[in-house]
Image (tube, rainbow over all chains, first blue to last red; front, side, top):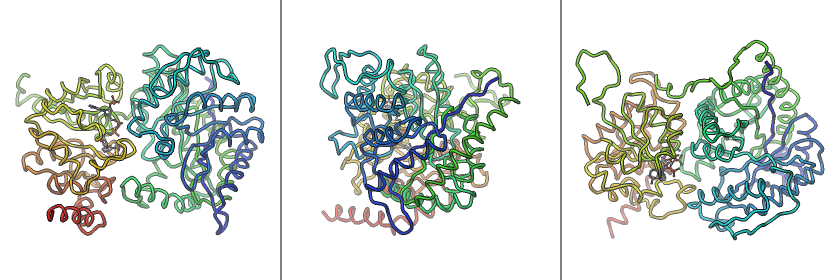
Length: 367
Length: 243
Ligand SMILES: NC(=O)c1ccc[n+]([C@@H]2O[C@H](COP(=O)([O-])OP(=O)(O)OC[C@H]3O[C@@H](n4cnc5c(N)ncnc54)[C@H](OP(=O)(O)O)[C@@H]3O)[C@@H](O)[C@H]2O)c1
């Protein structure tokens, strides 16, 4: 039986890197990201996606503008987001930006909508964090209507109503691929299913197989809504180097201060080296040699049934050449190796009924 | 419920208290799984209609019974609060009268918004919950460990490397009941003080986020007064006492 094809994405938040002892300027980083997207295309990766952040050390705030720059510098690679903070965007504006991007790139635009792990956009654009749910729910409703059933008449509490509104440039029929990014909240999984949208699991800490239950929940919810199966993807952080040791050391030098800073802002204590080693081994970090990372991705296709894997390769202060090497090895070594392993697995195994998988591990963690 | 015969083979023990969980999110579903696995009947609610969480519970915590919060509060023996702290005023206080309530909630500004009432160093958030639930007995537990560690960490009692959860409360029998639940969930319970002291389990304190064995939790709790946060709390409370 044929194996599920797998897509590989590269994610960037426009993290500002270092070059030797020098930290790049914001403007240099913007230009670097375009070059990295070109490199991603050259090494055969499928999608290049940018986040949306509003703080020092990240240059991805004008996501669609940067993606437009990449669109004109590339020919084939998909152009996406990771993630677009829907709650603080205007769905009409977002439609205009991404229908333009899709036109400009000849149908290469896509999106992941979600909460994002940073919340600066709320105060910046005058929103309250407490209103997160209402904002997301109403704006998703409107954004999907715009993509699926123009002209749109819509009324809600989060923006001005629309009457028989048509937007231009008009998107392709049905709209562009729109994923919902989730971070563990079962309610968000149900929401993705309710709209029949593909699910992107953002797994940035702990053992990924914890999400097997969420994938099952997603499939069963789609069934309950009478909607067809949709792909599941995974967004992870990582770095690929020639050896496991080199990768682990390089990543630690940037990851440790980053997580320490996050902890200071949210009130938890700095990561220990022991915790880090666990994240490298069985946890959420994809840091290692091409073989190590490829094996771990193959495990994800089994445990989480993913058909898309996105690697966030930039993290504040990482040297530019470590980033370039990650992109190169991801495209030239890891991606082909994963495909090879999956093909070999497909030849041997006869898991003929894909739907009958159990709730493996869920509920059985307690010995 | 029929009495269990003493010589009956082991199975779910009907004598274990029924646990109610308010909140069917990340923490609520994990705690449901752990306590169901230990043999407790579990009742659970989200913010609204139980039908909304039926599928979530069926898949992520099969065996737990979805109900409204009011029903959960009324019918359970012990109730765990696993909803966003900012929503605490929606907790059905009357239905919880006379019950042991375990507070697993934290102030998390990214969810709750920036709120002075939830981040006042003079008052632990569990004290705030206790004053909102004057007819209940509140114990803090299950709040400081990330939900993925809660999910991955359970071990049988006595297993090497078993992780611990700090608990805090004012009343010995209630602390003992909370300790039994923590143990049933698969962790070593470590009493760290009174409800007023429970601020040392909150965000901003060293124990917040901790996934440590018992000695680690004990040591961190003992160190609290010397930490920056400990001194900040002590100073704020001294000012209050002086005022
Ligand atoms: N995440 C962690 O790692 C962690 C660890 C320890 C403790 N905690 C604390 O545990 C609590 C829950 O966190 P979480 O991460 O599980 O959040 P979550 O995934 O967002 O889940 C929150 C749950 O609470 C429900 N809820 C909201 N208002 C309610 C109400 N009035 N009555 C009953 N249920 C209500 C929500 O239901 P609706 O969707 O219907 O609104 C949802 O099911 C928070 O206080 C948090 O600080 C979190």
